[in-house]
Length: 111
Image 1 (tube, rainbow, N blue to C red):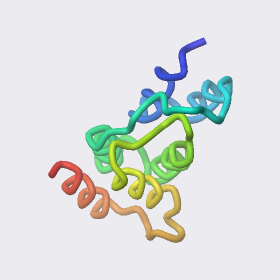
Image 2 (image 1 turned 30 degrees about the vertical axis):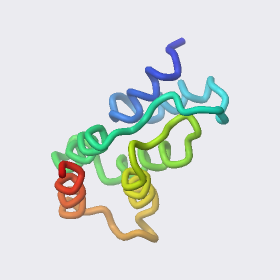
Image 3 (image 1 turned 60 degrees about the horizontal axis):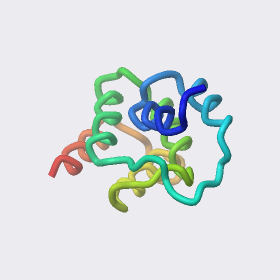
Image 4 (image 1 turned 180 degrees about the vertical axis):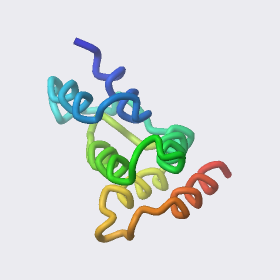
């Protein structure tokens, strides 16, 4: 069994199948006192670039954001990252995911 931090790293970087990562994480309790891993601006930018480059689909990005959004074992480098994750986890209320929007966010994250 892999340790939780390694699984979270793969999830945050979108390395691997989301269903398999979800299954691996299900072996650990949902609630934690402190985060095991912090999502950085550069990590988010890398995942969004995978979507821009069509390595992952818009639907996969939404599924990924939903897996990350409310996890107690993850934290965010800053509040902007948390807001972006929320945006992509709920496109039905936040607006459709588009390449243009992804590129806009990647540009903003690199500042």
